[in-house]
Length: 149
Image (cartoon, rainbow, N blue to C red; front, side, top):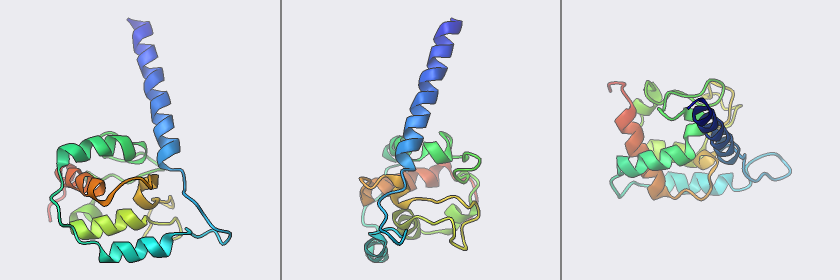
């Protein structure tokens, strides 16, 4: 029984490291060190309006694949990586459109609103995430967030 538990812990650790490396990959940068497609992402984010209702069940599955490396499997954050989303005043105070814009753009470590000094990469570091998938993740974040508006 001890060997099975140890093996499971090792597999879980390796999976967590793999997710962390993938999710926080940093993205493409040009020579100036800025995101090469940052202006395009910002323009798209400003025009984004949510037209579908997010599904928190789909959102939870997507969260587990894309967000847990920094925000933890329960959304309470990983020290030195990602903020607690369960007790987040920020999440509670934003509209779904504002959260979508935020996730699309991310936040650099030098942003004055960044309180951790750690980057939140655009799309959580996964450029393949669609707006619809992010909307599902937002629906899940709404479900786990306990802060009253």
